[in-house]
Length: 416
Image (cartoon, rainbow, N blue to C red; front, side, top):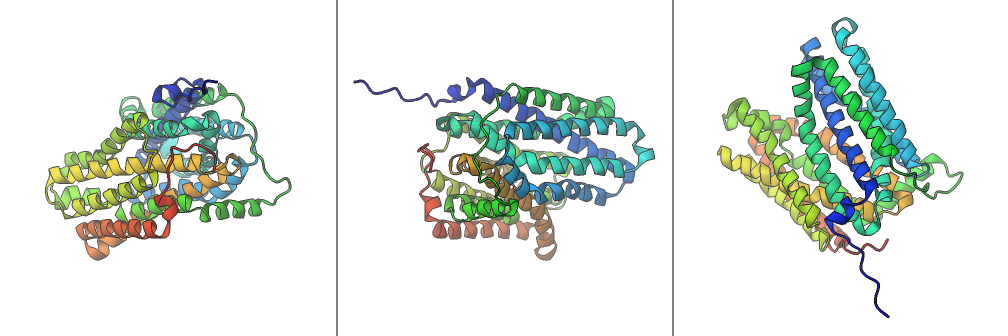
């Protein structure tokens, strides 16, 4: 009797899935729209207030509800139809984009409070969509294709995150704020239509009558008890918290490297170039075998790049260090995303992704603040290379304390 043929796990196989292509389109269009809206809102608010503090407040107004509701959003995603959650949150984004478009011509008269209210509403929607989206995406793709699907999703998100702000800037300059918001409105509509083409999936299994807080505690306990999950999240948290230099790039461009605003643009783009390049490579060659050691090596490489960047006084070397930092960060992003998909059962994916989202959100929000404080106390360059050294220490400690993460292999698609 002949053995059954092995399933096709090539990059082409995952792209041949109509529902995966639909979800990829939904993610790209919503990310493009969201990033374009964020840039347009920030520029318009600054034109109204001429106060840099407004831009800092803007980030907090969205981040506070998104992070505060994440754990509740994870429980909701693990108890309900995730497709309906996404349809509801995208509808909220559409309504907010419409609200922005109506507000834009009257911004000077209405002041900043209407736009802050809309941003807060978007943050509430994010609190529910961020856990539901990756959990639903995992239901759309067969388990043996999750690793490649993760690489494609990460690549598409990175590309959209790069293009989105540039798109917002071009639209603002050419057709004004209202036109930019209308364009985002259309992109959100496309995203909604793409999700509508995906068939409903079974609701996750959950314990009827279980209090919400008990479900939250079960999700937290699940993450804490698994080294591969808590270890990968901790690596991301501390590497961004201590090793990031993005918030300080204007200082490097102005005072340390003396390359001006054009050089700043190159420095800001460099990490994204490295990240997108390695993510596209990962769609063909996903880092599955020895993924744990690859993850640790990638975060260590990121730390070395930050040390190099902090010590460099040569523009070309600094750009190269940032490109390779983005490359290593791209590797770790693909592995972390696949780990969440493969190492959490379906009925826990919402809560696991919620915890991961809180780690990422906390590292991004606190990382810029930490960078500013450290630069003030230690000096800009010293704070960056010392942060890179701290990242290397975190990698060593994590590798020692989490042997299961060291040994993690993502080529075995059997459910844990």
